[in-house]
Length: 472
Image 1 (cartoon, rainbow, N blue to C red):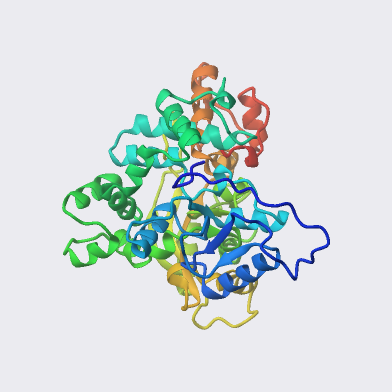
Image 2: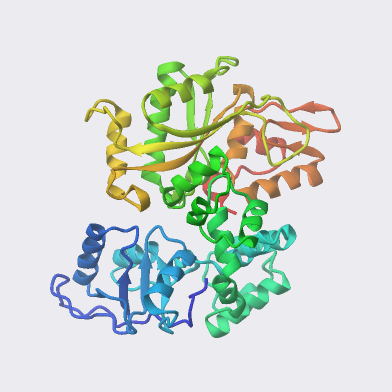
């Protein structure tokens, strides 16, 4: 929703009749684009630059005061802020908007600069405040900001004035103040203060290490540590998980694309089917909700014959390890049993893993469907993967009994806010307890079986909500 500096309108001249795309002039005065090469790569940047210029956009090769739209791919807003600080010495152009690649692709599809929407922003203002609150272990404030941000993102229109928000729920006084400041000034002083805060940047970087929580990051930040690199020179003893998090930090903080998630899914399916024919492997999480990028890959595994899934996780991780795919794993041997409380954790057998996607030692071209899918996904060359032909990806492998599969699928599809609200509804409105193992009916003291997500919604007396509509 927020440009990181004062807003500038994207208005441009209408397309000129009779002018061929292949011989464009600057068709959109006031719009000058700079494509950040960081994590995009030089080849892709050159291709996108040529594409935009053919369509009449002005693309600058260097960052200067005239640039109005800085477009980045696979970088967070604070990462771009840090890059800008180094390039400009803190003197950022006043009219600069920091945008995700989605704004660029939308503009290329329509042939003109599209309106900048919340989803195009590298940083969502309320998300920044939520994160900052959580870094201070203020869970209530963090949840309030996240709920407000979720509501804003779900609106079917762009907010241009406070009157547009009349009757919109979950927008507290603080959130409304931030929104009004942005609408009036194009920027929030509070949010910019957070983004420039040394502690926020340190907490953001340190909690980005796989296996590092808020308490540990806070302790390290108080000791003066600021980056994952500092951990290597500080003498701190790290856990195996944290060592892997530092080693693959850049990869693990680089968004996973849908193509990469599908590639990981094919690798795991091939392994599972070779071990246990007939087993089901389902891609869950944000990708099942239709998202094109995410932080990790969640795969739910079961077998229609209950009990056959026992022992599968150990065999699966051994197979992945033997193929040189498994970079790290920590196995949680859950009970698989149902719990009556709607807590955030389930009790399934689970492997918190880091897998290697891309070139494998000894792999032959076309040797398997997994190899072919890997080859298709690998050339992105982002982050630490650039130049080495592979990247590290966070993957959760979850094994569940078939009788609990529908509930596990619902729980692991998310989103987190949707699941939180659905479980609250079950408890407060239906006197039931819902979690990833089942739906417990307190009055009758029994679990309600369900063969599908649709049946779960029926038990709750709700219309079925398909996964793409669960992006709360």
